[in-house]
View 1 (tube, rainbow, N blue to C red):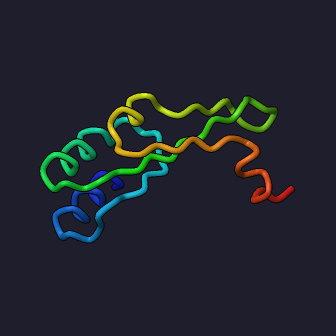
View 2 (spheres, rainbow, N blue to C red; view 1 turned 120 degrees about the horizontal axis):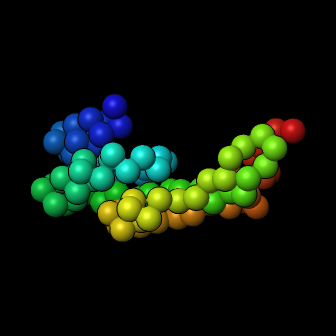
Amino acid sequence: MIAIDIINGALNNKYDTAILLSSDTDLVPAIDFVRNNYNKRIEYIGFSMPKTEEFEETRPTKRLIYATDLQRVLVVSDIKNFVLD
């Protein structure tokens, strides 16, 4: 559904920049399509978190880093104040 939203928003000129919080590389064709055909910018926010007892290790996706206009990688210290214990 995210790919459809990215394309639909571009077709209807609903955004200049989309902010993507997903590391799903299946989105790359939709990203390429809107960047190349509609001059839209895509910002990728990825996460870099170590493995814990509760969660698997998370790393940003290089393919999305290369496919997007701006990238941000959040680490534990960026989000720990927002996590409820």
